[in-house]
Length: 496
Image (cartoon, rainbow, N blue to C red; front, side):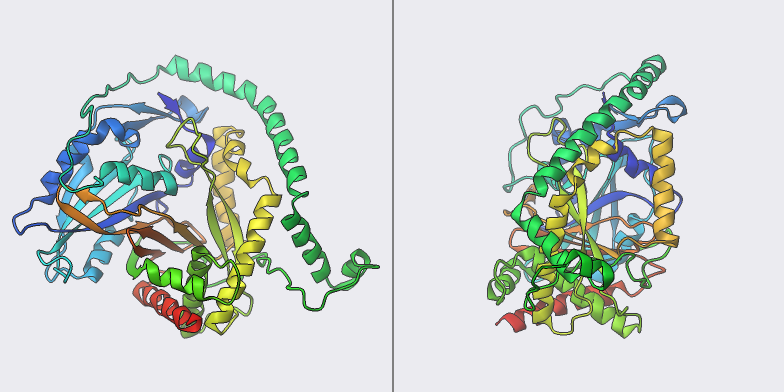
């Protein structure tokens, strides 16, 4: 039995009738033979690995009256409920698969069961590399149980790293737990309530230490100097008094506050669109290597491509703001030393996007500088303590704050326009029996005010792109996905 952290519980508290905070992975595999039975193979593979897959065995147990965060309790798993079988109709196109995925991820999860489900999707048309046809796995796990990084780890444990691998040692060797008593949960809730003030003081001290250490970092000092030099008006005149100004110094691109409005920054519906695309990883790396800016990373290229696609899409709709858009970039806080592998360890930083820059080469350079600025700001703030800070609020108050924050960001002050995430995935191919996984597409969540999520996952030599939107706010999501691919091509041409 294990209690959810405050951050884990926040993903539960954010849900309502139109917001579901689960995350999914869409894996597309070869049909190894015309008579293969992927549903039976996948169900058997999961049964053999349940002892390794703790998030798939854990069910929520709520504390009476919501006085404390819920608990995870390991229980017997009904695979007939969790593993489901479906298909796309002929001709089995990728667009049909995307439509089905959008429908399957739209609804909430049943909290009377462990918070996951896996769909085996058959009927996909053959390709040159998959002559017998293809099938897909859409596996959805609640964000309260895993974050993006641990979700990728979970999937690698569910699949094999070699074809026709042997059954793992200890298959089926685990025991269900007895649920906690009401008296025990209430007693722990009372103790946690008494301990919170002391923990808050300790956390405040740690935050102060981090800020003090960060302000001695050369990169942060340079950022502060550049921000000071960029100030205008009487305040800037006073702060810059007696200091020389370098006319060639690059002004840091800090994100606009609030972010400029766009058509997808509005309350969302309960309906979803999904669209996926894929590119060779070698081409994306070539863009980074070919840039005339030093130290450009794959993440810089991803952000620049997404920004260019957003710019063109909004121009086509007559809705591009004059101010640059901003993106929330998730940041994993995992060190490998966590006591709980599966609890959320994630924070984020906000970066200005070069949607106001016309040339692809210039967009990449500006994206690189914006992300460097965002990293420096992240280093300056104690954002790494966010998961611990989430534990300090009483659950009822945390729920109120969570929902009030979403309402405020939707109706009053937009913090950012879009979530853009680049997740490193497995470098080697994964398998179910002798069926090889060709692609691994991320399927993320959206919330009110943030009707678009753009996530990129590297996998076995590919860059797999997954876009999720509110179907009402962005009904033509495939067009935006095509623009992302076109923008990668434009960046490739500009770097040649």
